[in-house]
Image 1 (cartoon, rainbow over the protein chains, first blue to last red):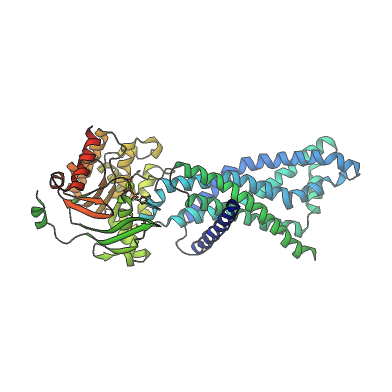
Image 2: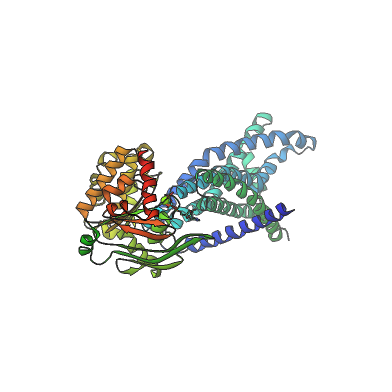
Length: 257
Length: 260
Ligand SMILES: Nc1ncnc2c1ncn2[C@@H]1O[C@H](COP(=O)(O)OP(=O)(O)OP(=O)(O)O)[C@@H](O)[C@H]1O
Ligand SMILES: [Mg+2]
């Protein structure tokens, strides 16, 4: 009983600390100096590091989804709707969530470990005494890079997912690429695309913030670095689903009525 | 040199600490510490592991905020400074970290360039690359300029860190255990380098160490940090001969560890 209570308190403490970290991020993000060069560098590093993984996963998800759906769609006589179905599924949910989870694993843990080891080896202190604000140089740039790159990665995942789906369809049925894609895009409404894209920015924010928070405040010692990387993934994955749920709820209100 | 002789050439202190207090929760680390650092001197602070030596010098550059007490550096009360004035003072106070703290995602060149990026005024006199090269030359490592920190030995890392500290031409250098983790020969090289820098640049230094050989060779004055206060102060010789049980036990302890 006592254990449960202290665990609940821990969770709320964590939420409080993370919120104040987020507040600090927004304050720092909007004030000078801006670390533009480092931001570009981080965007490149973060985007490039996960691009291959995201593309490979997106393509395979496209293949698998189509293969799995096909028999049922045939039973319902609806196999002609495959492009519509896969397109909407990918853009609305599969693309954003799968990409975000991959990024949480790849980028979030990377940031957690990197900042954690910089903290432990006093590199963050060294930056501070040499006149650079480490929060701006390390945290703000990385969070911004995540906010900008996760949506781009998601769009790439969507694109190759559809490609994967087309690949299966073209071997099983006879459909041209242009027809497949025009059917697929034709099925999407603004209400599918806008909320799905907006939420990916928030996914990026969550991944960047949690990774930086865990690393920046990691405890001393090399064990702290491992813990930082690990809990960055766990916490951000959980938060991603929560944000996803909220995003869908809100989007429903705006686009359904 | 006796402390009387030393007193004569002291002048106004570069750093003055009065009644410095710092606690972490219930852990009272510094309980009213006092210290003065005079121009050109090497002041060694001895203390057991966990006695608060790193905390002390981190308070000096406000990496930690003291709970109470007064710190004056170059005539400025650093507790009251805003960020800009603080950064200004920090360029005058070089800090050599316990584990070198080189940025391991950057080359040696980029490591040395980093302190310059926020201080364009320091570059005005010379071209950036020249400054970097000159600084590396002063620690004898100009060949390592394009290596990554992971490719350097412990002693080389310490030197690069020193070069990075020197590049802003500080008036004061704080060394946090400069010889810890190095073999005796490399440690001696670092000590000789520190002496050379004191000689050539006229910087004053606070040196934190466990290494009694280092303390003996490098110190003009020694302070013993025990129980959170400046427990004893004097030349190495004076303290070594001290009858005070805590001081002599301390020296015996460390001498035994070093030689036994
Ligand atoms: N950021 C911190 N938060 C909480 N406690 C700290 C912090 N930094 C230091 N301490 C505590 O302060 C005490 C002194 O630590 P400090 O690092 O100054 O020791 P030290 O004298 O430098 O030892 P060493 O020779 O091992 O480096 C220790 O008990 C340590 O646990
Ligand atoms: Mg220490």
